[in-house]
Length: 140
Length: 110
Image (cartoon, rainbow over all chains, first blue to last red; front, top):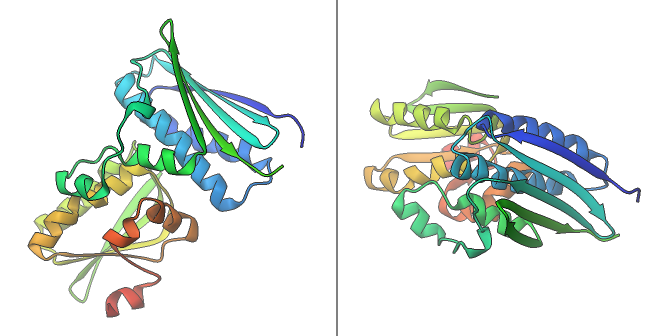
């Protein structure tokens, strides 16, 4: 498989999410990934970006987050960096679905999706820059 | 882009979702459902034929009504989801919490 690397800068507004999907569709379309996997990977990456846009950047369109997509043998890596309030998804306890229903809260579902769709999640924060790495394994 | 059309048919209110539901527009879906509830609807059908994508923002909208609807005995049924969109409902286990049917006919008979 050819080496692949793609990059996108995303303005912190929710309307940028559709541009992100267009970018991911094009990027993932170059790979031999099933339609369902493409769809789910797109969703997981969008959920992380949407969380950052809304919760870490309060939808401030002057702020940007950066997405890098890399392909290593056997895995696809989505690296999302920003300089907002750090949010480590790994520290977040996934709520029980019935609790989500009972509380009528609309949050929390996105993180469940990310954790179920991705094979590895890494998070690091250093000198004001946060990096969230979503990794999906593939047979190569 | 998301557009929602509504249609009244034999005592049911049908919402036709067309396009993609994400954090930028899930409020439109929320408002459409609230409007039907306020108008006294007792049966809401969601036609997912044209639904290409839904993120947690949209799924959360459905989730937020489930308890209320149980109490008020309002039926909420979803049908004709594409395979890939239905997969997302399944990842979250929403296929167990919500009434989802392959097509309109099955939804009406259930």
